[in-house]
Image 1: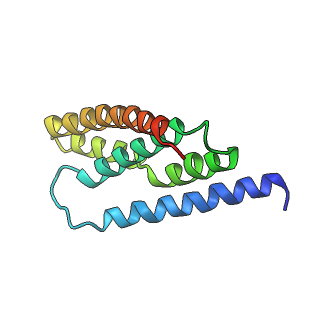
Image 2: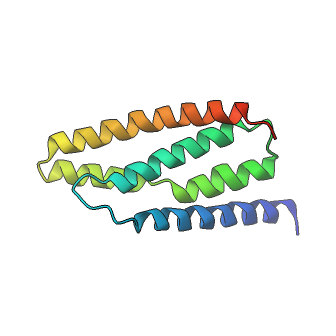
Length: 124
């Protein structure tokens, strides 16, 4: 198998794992107007990608492809977040939509920072 095929396979397998994990989170019995499961998924994805980036000196290029492009790419839900925020605004729930958008962005920025810091400190 050539190098490109291996890379594609790693991204695909990682993406499948990320998508399955995302789906499992969506099954949690949480209800309400605020899309908390998407927020938690985005925060988890932010933490994970920060961790992976923080460990980039310890991971091979293939490991980075699997985790960063594959798992994180299949797991995070920014497009869903955008749609849900838009629907809240369109539904006249401006305060709730604003709270959702602002908390998502700020918490995920913090998540990437904390994950990266943790990744730098992990000894393999």
